[in-house]
Length: 123
Picture 1 (cartoon, rainbow, N blue to C red):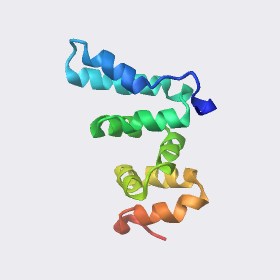
Picture 2 (picture 1 turned 180 degrees about the vertical axis):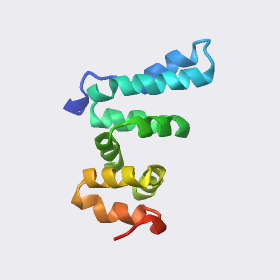
Picture 3 (picture 1 turned 120 degrees about the horizontal axis):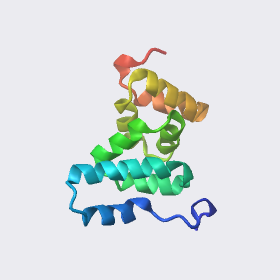
Picture 4 (picture 1 turned 30 degrees about the vertical axis):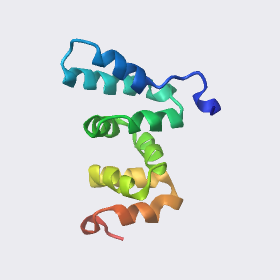
């Protein structure tokens, strides 16, 4: 087990189980899950973050992704396949995408620029 994730549980699976058994409407449960992940994000290891993110519905993942810091968005993107990266980078406003790409470092710059909508890229 990765030492970064030692002792941490997967909040997505535990919370999803708790929330699915509650009598609250599904929208509130999903929002609660996103809020819970945001609250715990700083204490979660990278692998746990990636796993939790991958288990979210697309709508919940978008909500979480857009509320993360630039650095946290960049960290998630670094571990994704190119096609998935493209989807998430294109979700961001152009200025935000530029910030994320800059945060990812020079080794990811060219790949990420190629994933942007070509009409929006000035090189």
